[in-house]
Image (cartoon, rainbow, N blue to C red; front, side, top):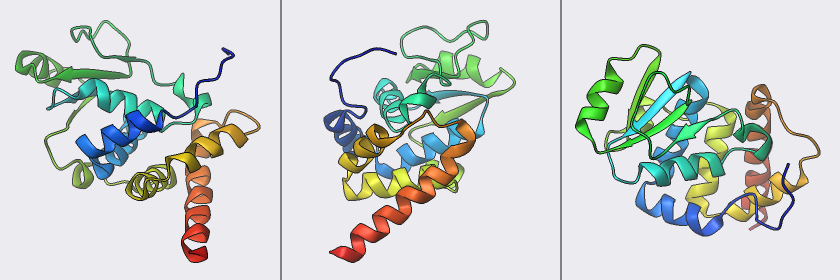
Length: 170
C-alpha cells in the first residue's frame, strides 16, 4: 500500500474517457473483465485509455486482481488478465487464436455483447452517465476494508440505491 494524496478516481481522465469511449462501452468493459478470465481490448487507438478507465472504476482493493499491459505485443506466455491491442490487425488475429482469451472490440456494440447486468457495472454506467464520479471517489474513500471480487455486485447495488436517493432528493 502506497501513501499519497492521489484520488482513487482520476475524475478528469474518467470524464475524457467517457466522452471518447462512452459510458455504456466502459460499463460493458467492466462486465467483460468480471466475466472473463483474460481479455484483449482492440478496435480503437484508445485501448490504453479504456484500460485506465476500467481500472479507475474498480475499487482500489480489487485493482490488483487485474494485471494488464498497454504497450507490450500480445503473447500467450505473458499472464496479463487485460491486454490493450489497439488497432494492430496482426495482433488481433494472433489474439483470436488463443483459447480462454476474450477479444473485446471497442468499435463493436459492447453494450449488447457484454450488457452490464451485474450490480457494479450497472452502478458504474449510471455514475458515468450522470457525471457523478465524485460519488465513486467518496465511496472508495469510505470503504473500511478491501472488498472481495464477490462483493462487487452488492456494492454496486448499494451505489445504485444511493444514486436513486440522490435523484429523488433533487
